Image 1 (cartoon, rainbow over the protein chains, first blue to last red):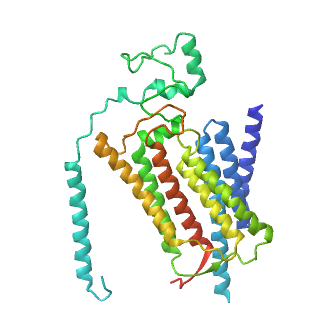
Image 2: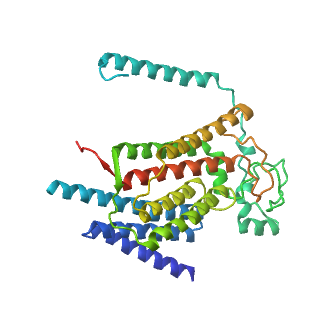
Image 3: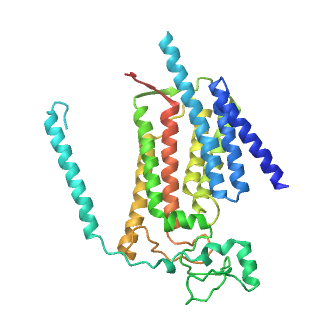
Length: 84
Length: 277
């Protein structure tokens, strides 16, 4: 049973990774990256590494996604100021 | 040093400072107390590493704990199974094997890791240094958001503290705990348009807990003759007050990482007024 769940998670990770690479919009790339981290942390849990899973979920899926979004917002703001 | 001092003087001062630091560094090496010679066979025993694995217990019960060709690392000490809540005064009393390696046996690497994170946070703070304006999140947060984040912040803070205080018992530790706390702070920033963090407090907290890590390590150096050596009794495995100095170090790391990442979030999310030159 657990192998099917793991396979599903792997499929989600691969799909979101492809989205993160090929997406035209940067924001959706960032969200997809957060989803990759979430799936990878689930995989770590399946592979009996709960320590790494917790770290990945807190840092990869939580903080770094937020920090990327903030950075994107700052960069866009700088661009619009230049155009004015 | 003032701005109008000649460059040569500045360079000579920097050079002499570096020289003094280098001399002190090597002098510390020669003057350091000689570490007690550690016999690796007496330390990380295979039995200890395997203590949680079901297979080990099963093969122990069936009478052949050691697979063909394996020899016990310490033939002089008879094997005694380690049980939670009973076994006391182990070499390293952490119930979480990962923690016992990360903080105890490889504590020096963790010190380097913390230093790397400190440098990264300092770099971010330098990059966004300037006069502060308000949040870059322009939209006014709704009532649900601003109240909900404040309520959630208390719970998130408690959970982060739980993660790093129980680092030696359950999965997790200083780094995830600090990250969880920082995400709570991020929630405060998102929910409140005019939220301002206490920058001096964050910096002070971070520096003090970083110093606490090194001081604990030095205490080990002067009491057990090895840097970052466990100098406290390890207690009964599975208890909250067990595993010696691991809990202390993880509390220091958790507070440091939490303050650091909160400062990173703070310096990124608050708009700064400066010339990008």
